[in-house]
Length: 95
Image (cartoon, rainbow, N blue to C red; front, side, top):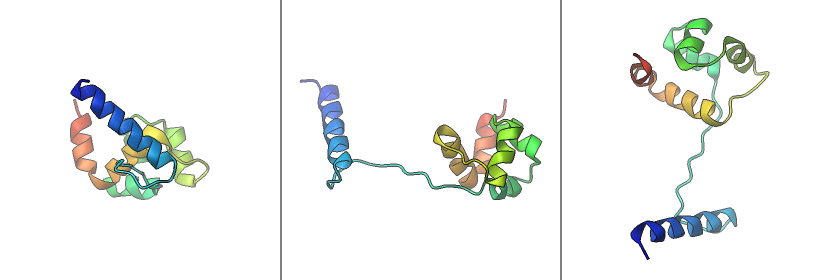
């Protein structure tokens, strides 16, 4: 069997073990909830600037800041990265 197949097979077996609650070599990335208003405040941006810079609708940003809704999936990942490295993310997104 090819190295690629063996790697995929090993990864799937690790994922299955993890999903059954067994100790596994699987690497699991868990993203914590974030304080969106605090993240935005630390960037020094207004709601409009922050939303525009990171591709978020202003309405969604307001809901997150009020706590009506919470970010999930890719948005949560982005906000976690922005919380840790805002300048790097802005630099990567600049044209």
